[in-house]
Length: 318
Image 1 (cartoon, one colour):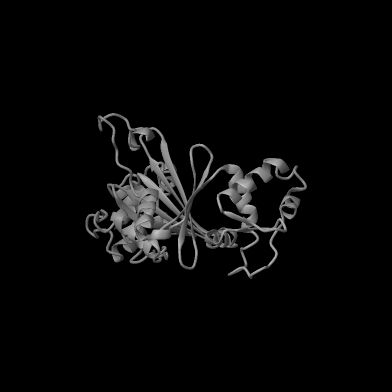
Image 2 (spheres, helix red, strand yellow; image 1 turned 90 degrees about the vertical axis):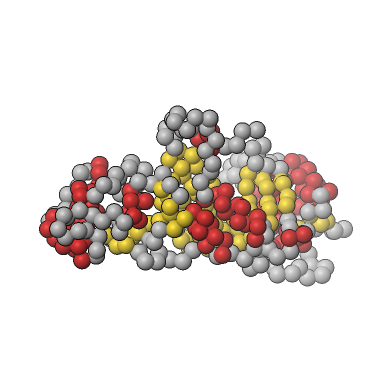
């Protein structure tokens, strides 16, 4: 999404003033709750009133805040969900913070003593804007869709290092031998979860049997060509992580999704209930579905909406 557009900027004293004069509740899940918890007051009610009046946020006669003009502040203050979008680009990380209230979305950030509230949008529009920021696969008939056991994924991740800087492997070029791979794990005390050599060899052979690793007569291995793009994307440490927090009545529901963008495709990396790892290449339709499932509101399927809600009420029953 673009940076905050048509933003509302408020100083601390202005928010403290609005806490007294507006029909807005600062909930504990809001980043603004500190104003309520500490019962903050502006240093000067008159100065805060004048500043907010000039911004068109307060009626000069009644001293009351204008609810329509303060709608974005209300979304952040009375939020029922939060979405974090973390863009990792090597050593650089950009974090964008969004708050949701009844389907309305506002981007929020704090810069010192200034609070920024973006223009209000809908969850559907937010999903569409996020999707437009990526380049999904165009070859829908040949999309990568694989499941690795934990051991197989470890083998894949190691051999992925061998192609991360290679656009196209040269014909006849030597690749890593299994002994060279296993040498990466001489000091098992640093990585206690690394399997022993026989386990590693077994998982390596499984990937060979699945045609995901290629083995030559010299016992050299290379990843299958269809895995190269994802391997380079993963090894570049460029990825986007989405985390949504839904503030249910008595607990939080947390969803996390990670995608790896490459120059001409997008890959979804996710863990399954049995510990396996799923790698899926996404076209436009699948990318839209993944982003919607990651950051949009889940349907509430509880039998009685008047009862206290729990996280389990937001998952479709089998």
